[in-house]
Length: 354
Image (cartoon, rainbow, N blue to C red; front, side, top):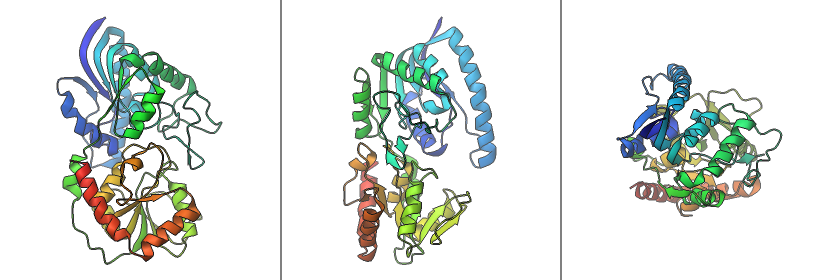
């Protein structure tokens, strides 16, 4: 086979969500590499961009399959494995000598990619693949046979793999799961966020008590948000979403907005930002963005997640129990302790990103 010395593969474009921001940031470390990366031509036109990315992903996958019949790779970088697919990722690993594998979620042991079940953190498949019957593959469709082959390949080939993670918690998990692999921590600097978001906001005029800032899914805490709003029925909750929900509490205001000027304006009118991820999450852009906007952020304190790296006086750490958490949040609201948390959060986030 013909050998390619250095190859970087990502089937998402730069600036395509939080992962795309991270991709843009790290590419400067790989300028000498040949690259299979979907270009980002229609970033400002959401629907057109989605169709474009879908088409090019299909084309790139087809081309890569042909590529691997002729070429092998000396040094390979895999970024956003989910978009590449399990079969193709397995083939890339088997045809490469030295691999850097960026870990962006939990799919190296969880088929759902976000290790959450029934709104609780789940490690059922950490030792052996044994999912619940209603677990489905996320964020893309797949099948168990391809997934198991992918997991077995990681285990069989771990000596030649270097996993790159953003948090100390994930480093511990990877070392435990793949003791023969190398694991390096490379935190995301969020360079664009610093320049885009640092402002001084008026903290006197508020329209909402809580703002849900996360992807609209259960692992990111959506069901928790709904239950919290029902419990704290005399407080105002804001949900940015284009979905229609049935039976919502009357104290939840839903608006069809996404990240941008209008989104930030609504955050400015909120006392506490909720980023209540249930799974063992790495650094999430929503959390960092909110801290840079000088807002108090409430998170669920999940073991081995990014929450462990944030000091207690810089974020509101919740337990996941609605009764307990509603009391904690009421205390922060009634005593206006959220203002102090907001300032501490801003200072910590700016120092963290240096």
